[in-house]
Structure formats: structure tokens, C-alpha cells
Length: 112
Image (tube, rainbow, N blue to C red; front, side, top):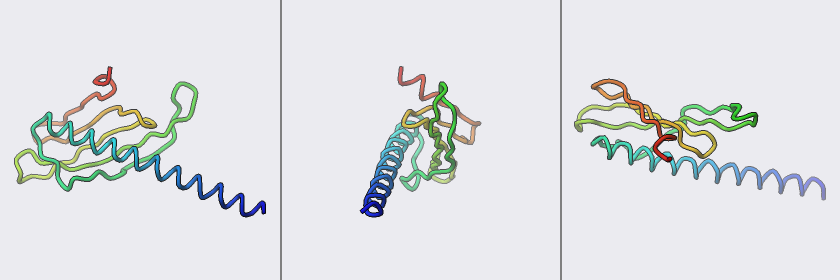
């Protein structure tokens, strides 16, 4: 019985982690789309990819920091990369490697 309960708890934790990750990915996808629209760029492949993930300290507590990567084009013929940073579920920043020079968007400041 204890083993069954342990497997059930492990399955629940895996399901919760998957759901939390899917919610973060959807949020970043919407952010990347909005940033590209505001800059007049075209999102390519309509997807974001988890590039990095680590635990960091945030006000004395542990938080999950994730960086997602996406691709965009400024003229339909080039491919450029961008990244969006999240702290837990809070969007922090977007970096775009724009052909005219790197762009940084402070998403945390935009929310306020």
C-alpha cells in the first residue's frame, strides 16, 4: 500500500510539473508574439524552446529561472534569435539579436 501511494504521489508531482511547464511555455509564446508584433517583426516557426533552466535565490527563497528561445525575421529573408526570461511565472526581459543591434525589453517594468 505504501508503494502504491508513493507511485501515486510521484505521478501527481510529474503531472503538476508538466502542467506548470506548459503554462510557462504558453506565456512565453504570447510574450514573444507580442514583442515581435510591437517591433514589426515576423515570428518564425511559431514556437519557443526552453534554452536554460536553473534555481536562483529570490528574496531569500528559491525560484525557478527559465530562458526560452525563439526566432524572428525583420524582412522575411533573415533569421534572428530572441530570448525571454521568466522567474517562476513572472516575465522579466526579452533580448532580441536584431540586425540593427541587440534590443532589450524590460518586461518586468512593462507590467507595472
